[in-house]
Image (cartoon, rainbow, N blue to C red; front, top):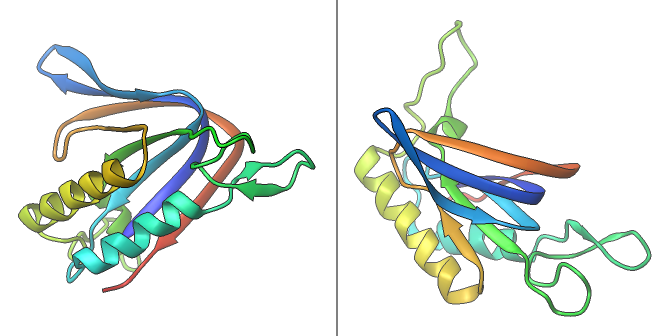
Length: 156
């Protein structure tokens, strides 16, 4: 599985439905994670990726070093928000031609199952979890903090 994480001051995802849109999820300071299941991924890969996302030290401590995770964004135990948005295009193969191939991405039904599993596991382990909607037309807005962006990946 893949997660592209960005440290944010705030972020929100809106679902577009025809000519209207609605906020599906929004957070203040924390992480925006664009999440993708690849062909052959398992719940074990999702669990490993979630552990990485929750534990990855991208927030600054009192000395200005990136030593704090989303579970403790201020060094005093305050959890940051976690906004999870499905994005199958992260698995694209861009090695040939001018059009990406999405063959490496999990099929839609498997991708949804693994994304839903990832979200449920995140909600069981972290107090502030918001999401978009799998397969929906979404608009994501964010205020990057840094910017700080990392590509995290686990394999089945």
